[in-house]
Image (tube, rainbow, N blue to C red; front, side, top):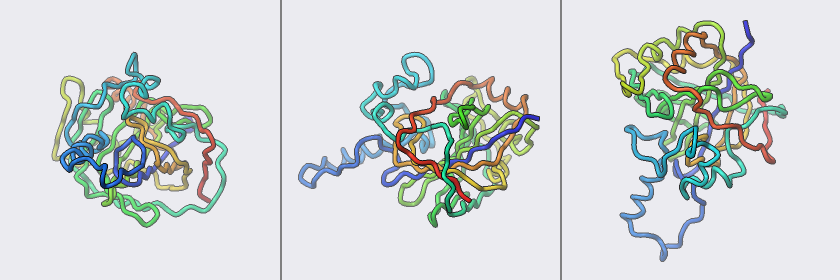
Length: 280
């Protein structure tokens, strides 16, 4: 059986949860009217947190004129996709061993609410689960999938990658990502795979539940690096925490997902001057 890798990543975004613009705050005399500020705030909420699908600032995707190499030119809101210096995903290598705090997951079953939005398949959670990072709690909002993986390890992609998206009370974000490789059948994913939506049936709900805890590995050693969201608006100030332990899906399970969508991964981005650390 092929040795497989799993990546768990957690991202922290200070301040407002979406934004791709700069962090400067206008003086009180130059602040826009309240209605304009409220509209701007709503516009900048990252699509990860939309409970219902909404139009993007510009059409984007993974092929043609809307592909990742064009994202930074599609809208002023997406400019970090081409100008940012801490973009994700990246290739993970040359990590420095250090002491990092343990990640604490408190996950519970949630009813199936699966949506295909043209970019991925996502499961909308009922907000009863959380992860604690650096003594701060983040509530699980949804999880979704990419095929093949977005992050690489020593230049190699995994078959798929799962992102579990969390939000704290003050608007910070934590995204847990799991790299998945082909291997043994994984029954923990059956509750999701039995209800996968499609282009013809874009939302599927069921009283059947899925417990995200069963989708994670038991070993929690992880890498850490500063990065960004991997989809527009490609917000930075994101902390990624990457577990080493593998998760597998069978060839049949992977092919079932790829029959819905495949190739929805952003290519790896320049590492630049960033340091990758790994917990002891």
